[in-house]
Image 1: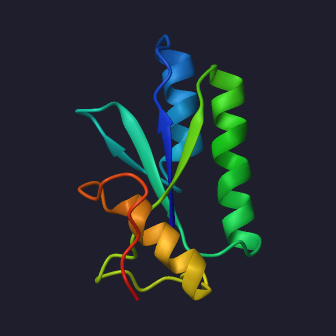
Image 2: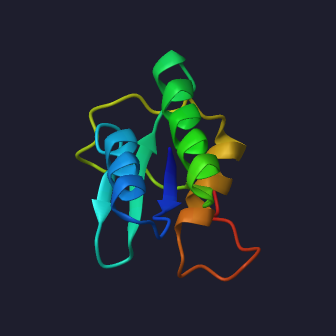
Length: 107
């Protein structure tokens, strides 16, 4: 799955409230890192709307969105990308931060 992260843009109260209004329904906020996080398991209509809202908010407020492949959490009940074995290996390797660069798991 993909995890979308958007860094909070510093803003005065009216702009801060606008960021909150745009993101609170689609992402969770981490006050320690001052970032919003949303997980995306499919590029269906809902997934594309989520991405569009994140990118629109980033553009309006002068910040950016980062997409990172992550392993599907055990508690996840939403959709997950259907993956080919090669793509699956790459996604899992990128999500495994302890693995040396270039080493993929043996199949």
